[in-house]
Structures are given as structure tokens and as C-alpha cells.
Amino acid sequence: MLFAGRLDPIDPFNGGPPQDFKPGVVADVCSAKACIQSWHDFNDCSLSPQASRGLADATYQRWAGKDHTEVAWWVLDNGGHTWPGGHISPGPTADKVGPLNTSVNATEEIWAFCQRHTL
Picture 1: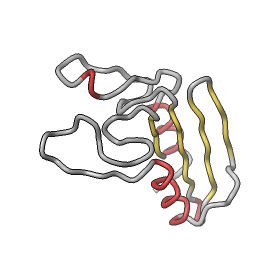
Picture 2: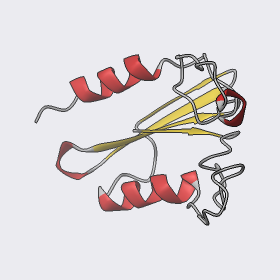
Picture 3: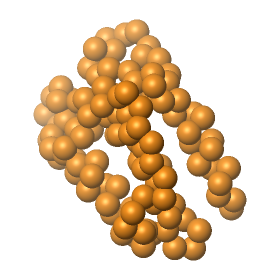
Picture 4: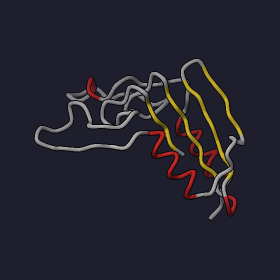
């Protein structure tokens, strides 16, 4: 399961270098779409989503994969590098993580995902 915020300054949705990271650190991250595609390919998932839903500022897709695996993806239109449905702790980096999406509760979504898959 991947939660990807379109306004994430640390792990940019479209890839590239993080904004306002650490001085002197050079980094380049892959896009959220490339990341989810790699999991999709690894799990040999179906082409069409098995489930999807849209909220005002978030969309969800889930694909069935081989051996009872699945790949799930939340795209958070107004989300930053935050825990969806959580909170942003005050402090010196609070303004550097981007906005908090409260339409989705990541804790509940991850728990539902894990309940569908036993070890």
C-alpha cells in the first residue's frame, strides 16, 4: 500500500530532488507512479483495478496480483509528507512537510489491508 501526496516536498509526487531537504545532500527520488508501477509489475497484477474509489481530495485503486497479493495506492491531492488522518507536530520542521490530508485515515486503511493478508 502506498500513500502519495501530490504536495509532498520531501518525496515529490512526480519525482526529482526533495525541496528544502538537508543542505549538501543530493538526492533524486522516483515518481509515485513509477514506484507503484514497479510493485504492480513485481506482483504481476491485473491491468484493471479490482477496486477504486474517489473522495473530494483523494483517490484509491487496488489491483489483484499473483499468489493472493495485491497492490493498493492512495493519491492524496492535498497531501504532503504526513500521515493521512494524523496530525502535524509543531516544531521547526512543521512547515516543511506539506499539508495534512484528513479525508483518509492511513491507520485504518493499512489495518484493513493487513487483515486481508495473513502471514
